[in-house]
Amino acid sequence: MILEIITPDKNVFEGEVSVVTLPGKNGEFQVLNDHAPLVSTLAKGNLTYEQGGSKSSLIVDGGVIEIVNNKVLVLAEAVLEA
Image (tube, rainbow, N blue to C red; front, side, top):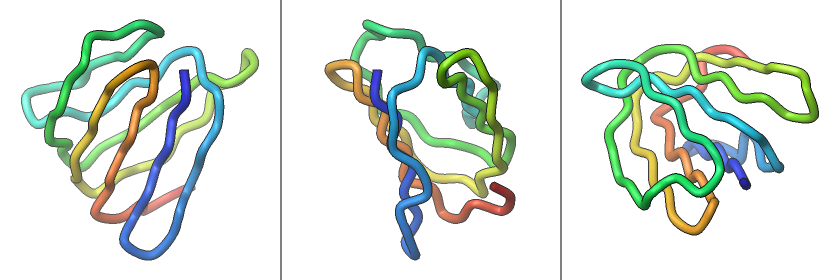
């Protein structure tokens, strides 16, 4: 699936990933390939993703996520670490 992370200032990341873990307002949740369509708000916390067998993580300061057709679009208020 494709993960795209965008802030008001810049495009932080775009690429093919196998799993994404996100800090939802009601707790952490994970997205895998062929996930059902979803729109949700994000809390401040760790966003992690796995790409080619290696894991990466960053801290987002809230935002919104949209999942549709194997694309995960994260509109983050800010990325505090990359």
